[in-house]
Length: 341
Image 1 (cartoon, one colour):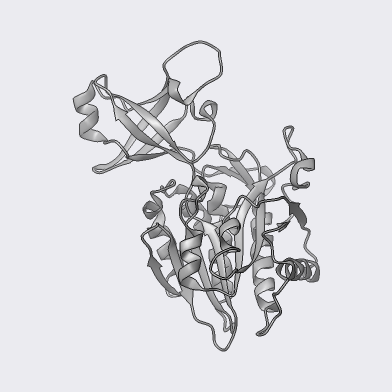
Image 2: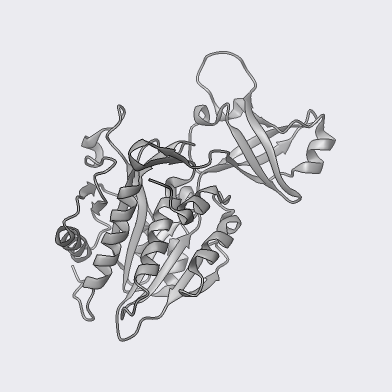
């Protein structure tokens, strides 16, 4: 199964945490005339589309940022110390190729290690080599704070599966943008999409975006840990598999009526789904449901293998099922629906 062109463009775009604007162009192009697009000082890109009548306002949240690195220091030897953007493991980064977004353009580099022993790899041992002959040449190419991402373009695998960097959470954003397009056929809903900033930092941009949007409902679209791998543990948050359809979250942050409507939409469509549970969602939902006077919130996630690595893997059929679920859920929303607990 070929990778959808929009998903391919989203995955190839730069834009790690704090530098989301580097991927704005791809999102703006995808939205086209489907809605009005604006950005804020936090780094959220927000799409607004007015419905045809007195409908509710549904906001779809899918964070745009991805894990990455940034230049921390340029040494006199021309080698670059780095710090992380988001939380991921040093042993995953070691030996990878990277692309640095510098003022003069993109700069290629490789992640190397200051020691040759076999002990645990730590971030403090790693550096990036861009091939510079010394500090002056390196400083002419890059500067402290320049962001970088691992070079890991989309790779088609068997059974309609895709491996790539940044599927967390460009996969969720793809679902949101496709749902926006499919709901542009005269729905009464006011519909917004928040391509959110800073989610990988834990302090997300979803709160400020929600404060300005004032939606009636929030539906957060993200990825969750697939448990159909040797290290997967269904006892932690449920059993979620590639090809198993959307994971629908149930927990304190989730509005019970929104959860029920999501289940109803999935069952009416005859699609497979799983239920994910937890004290916290570890998504934008943890900020949206407490914003303003409280926003009725739900979470739909795509099962994903190898989280926070260059080989994050999903099944395209699950993305399509998530899109269909979002559209079906939106069509169930009637004015005056009771969202009180």
